Image (cartoon, rainbow, N blue to C red):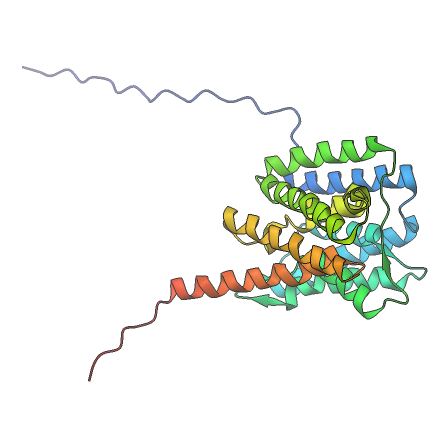
Length: 285
């Protein structure tokens, strides 16, 4: 008796998802946001020394990123990260000369490739470059220190945009813990020194702190991996910043992150190495 073959039907095709008409590369979100900070701050208070100096910082940063990326990793790296570093330098550095902008950007980018441990760079690039310039060339270089004053709308716009972006990147807890800690320590400083609490809280309303809380302390490459560790580190940054402020250190937030951040990274690297390579048990003779 002959058997009839049953035709094998092809598996059903998955429905084709329509491609979005407009998609933004996530790598451009942070550069677009920091550009908004620049525009809001400059149009409201004229925070830039000059467009030429800011452009010099950006061009130098991107050029060093491309050259060093090619030298060390044998490929052309995306310039978004370098753009953020360059524009941060252009906003935060204050100097009558042009050379500090180029030198600060060059130092910042170079630190990513030279100061590395176990394949990880320890400092946020712009924090490293700006802190070094402020410490080594105080006669020529200063930092931006302008508050929004009574004009709250620029701050509200920046905070709204920044909160959404940081939330999407799952790093809002870092910014939130720092802000809460800063305000708590501001009240503590006010009680200790007798100064009005408004003057102690005022710095966080400035464009310098917007860059600090949304870009420097949340940098994925220079923060510890665990969420609990990130919260602890940023709390310690705010604590050390308060100590520096009590000691009349002008650029307390930069120096606090410069010291606390790399120490936390080194501790994590040391702990990782011991977890990966446990000590061999000794054999009794």
